[in-house]
Image (cartoon, rainbow, N blue to C red; front, side, top):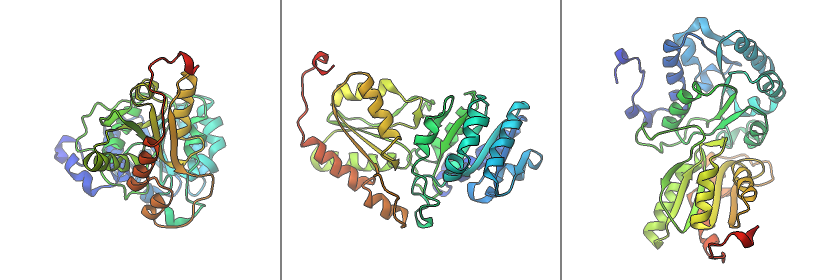
Length: 338
């Protein structure tokens, strides 16, 4: 599309742009349409790409310096004044360093503030434990009023940013450092906050993934179908809260075997959220959670860490093989499962 249309990129550019870059461009575009949008960062305008908004709308862009707690306090004040703040910083700073301000200043007052957190999970693997963020989903989904979204790629990031404006209240969106591959080929796939997307049909087993692990799950599903004829259903659970309960229960009923995959600790994230739904519904199935175990991740390249912690296509393939080797009760009567 052309500059005259108001868009600064097209879907054909997404292979050459990171999710953060697409987010920056989309937000700058939305700033043309919505004069109530403001953008804030804590000295990370370039790294998080929110600086694109600042280039287009400098009068509505605020860099508070390296002061993340102040960052969210100021955002709360702007929200109370009638603006819609978009706040960007690294995920570890948003969820841990400024966790109290997000909880008390923003969530407690149910303010319309959008937090776009970059460098999440192990995407900044070489930076070490201080910059790894494998706890943010557990933290953010525990806050009342908070919506939590984990886009699979840049296209989904663009859709999620647009959709966030139609959802009042606090929203936390986590994206990576910027080297994630493209999953979607087009933007119009009926993205809706709170509704999972079926990426691959299957009746033998279901893999529920979020973020960059969606692509890994897809690659594993395609390989398993071609090499062994195994039909793997892949669900992109891009919204962790509110989670798509209907899609989870349908997968349990249809396949009775569930694997969750996330670039996050196995404690408190996607896997925990899925397990809660299954338990509350009184269903019985095989469930395996793939993610970072109860450790601080080692320092390393992101791809190597994905392989080490078995959240890449190879690890997912191994988990599917293991799962299919276990017996599962095949009757359709759920009464004896309660």
